Image 1 (cartoon, each protein chain N blue to C red):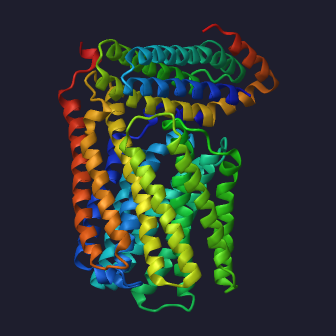
Image 2: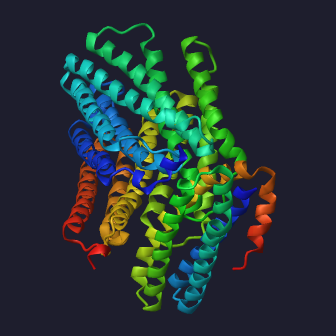
Image 3: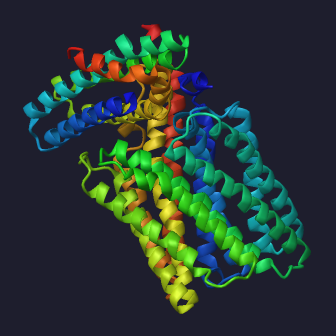
Length: 422
Length: 144
């Protein structure tokens, strides 16, 4: 099994990863439009437009990019590449895209049949992906990052199953007495089980190795995913058994994430590599937003103030987006260079020529403004419209950067010079 | 045993490169050149330790001749080529090119190191068993 995992030939074609990444700004533009035109509705908890916006963000943007990154990461961190990446990538991307569009459309246009399509497509995409990747993560040598990836994918599959149940409820407009319990379990699994562990697992590798920092403590690496999994499991158990003191598990996870924020911030601050790099800015911004989300979530647990919970949710989603944008700013130029070099093109562009630094920085500054307006929007709802405007600019620039990288790749493929031609 | 020894060597190479970048950013060109030279030498020595001792022993023990170790050798060749390009850029004072190629080199090097640290070294530790200590002594004794 290891033989395959290390083969450069087994790295997925660049088109597989780019297909997922290029869908991100398109969903981002849809979300921005929704934020621009319906800020009040989006900020109203459980309003259909609010649910549409949440799913565009967490599925269309965050999960889309994380699945794309998984295709790339799997051969490096998981030890074994995803088999038949072109076909499998196409299947997952197509099902997922139709599913997200159907779900958002069902909420926005109040069309119950679309919920059924969304349930089938999203359920199929996520379960297919989990069934494809999870077996690759078991049976070989285990390490801390692998544990995080396992937890993430299991949680994603469970999130999808609960999502299917809820979508069917929306389609029939009949809600069981346990609907609220299922909904809380659904978003807890999605946020705490799927998104956070994958980012933490990647941070354990990327922060230490790419920015040359002191390593995270072995205790932290070994136990963080166990604690997250245990807290989630107990929280869901307590939810279904309607037991008290549910907040204890949220506090455990909040304490753990705060530890992650502090240790990561310290490492980035004390890093040995001092080269100015936009990905560092995104990491810094991301962990600051995670801390903000934790503070407001604790505030909500203490006060029951829904505004605090809205700010917490917005900040958490922006934390994930910040890390994703930082990752894209590195991985896309690297992949263009890597695939061209591996094919022997002597004029493969260096990374800084694939996406110029000033354009990556442009995405960061627009993200900063978008995030600032979004975070204050529960207090000043019209700020969400402004955030949508800046978000549209940010996603347009991101799309232009990705298209530019893709164009450069294909131009070099067509007109470049290979070593063998000399 | 092998994992810890080789991982520490990876980290010391990384630190040299980070110091080299810092020196060049501070416009201390001669110091930067000297640090790059040390980084390049220690990285190439690390590749030599693997290719001349570690991989060969592992291949003999397991019979895995054309698998992971072969792919690591291939990646070493790519990294050697990148180090050569960086050296050329530095000698010709093309600092932007140096940093640009360096970014690709660093990502490639770290991906390579991740594969070794997460998978290959634990496999070698397992294959060598109690002989791992002796292997570390052999690797330490190799001249740089």
